[in-house]
Image (cartoon, rainbow, N blue to C red):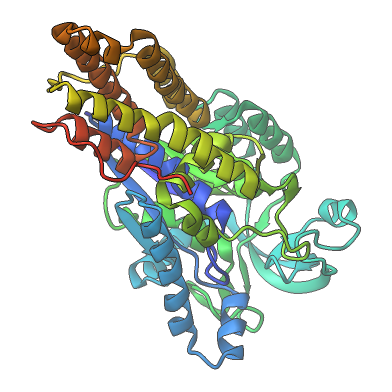
Length: 472
């Protein structure tokens, strides 16, 4: 047994949960469940990022105290995580008193690498982020996500001297001490690292009032980086407690749009603190809507709650974990979702369970649940290399093979000919193979795996009154 610590990016609470958040949670949850299956002790962090101008201004506009607004919206994400059956252990809010105090202690520990300077450049109000001249030129002076012009900003801020860590960080990324997956994202980060400037880590209080005060300078408030990124270690108790039992994280799961902050800014903070870097950062792509990036302006945003309502949680987990590639952009359409539910969940798996349970019941079969066979080297390799969608394909190929085996072995014909023992043996073998598959299925579809095990490990196999995946 070993300790495994998994982290997910904390979403900004000024909005509702979306499909991208679901992907962070689902991918981390699959790995958490897999690690528990192999005997690891798992700690699994989720949470919410609650400071910043947008939270403050929206609360003010709606005449709600800002802390009350942050609490209400944080709860939306917590509820969403629960609805997805995510097996997290720790939920952190950046407004937690312990987190605020620990952030200030982290700032003080980083002080040898912090300096004050004037910022004179571009800023995106929608993203609440500073924009380099290169980004300004690439986007022709307009934010592609918010369709609003960048504004010119001149103000005094504190900076983290990224230059102090570039050489060490490059070495750590190149030799996979900090492994960035997929590989092509690693190469992107190495190219970005070359041009990464020192970063602003504060803003004047008159510009950003809702945030963590900078220690020793009441005129400044921490900008997002030290506040939000530090949650991965403050939730473990750093710097008040020794976190070496859990840190470094085994894996951090983030979307590709925030990878650079996790692959450059966050490691720089850790190096400045003298802490080890996370072992891996897993970067997933975007979920597209009918081939296009989801956008409010286009009007093609897919509401995850509507997807959950369509065919239930297990169908949601199935589609986004198997049909959405772990690492690259993949497509969602309602037609594809419905087709996956009917042809794969209902026909391949639901029908297999119903058929086999019926045949076992009719022929008085009592499977003896032996030790599950988890020795599939392909499955193990794919799971440990974080190719979850391909590992799910591997499991599904076993389900399809079981369907073919039932058809080829024809146990019903053996029973008709009076070859009762042979029919029972064939069915018992098939039931045991399905139980073995259900163990591989647990990280992906935990409730379905549990139902399969309940059906085929009972003293008397009872045919489910309703198929696992009823056809619409």
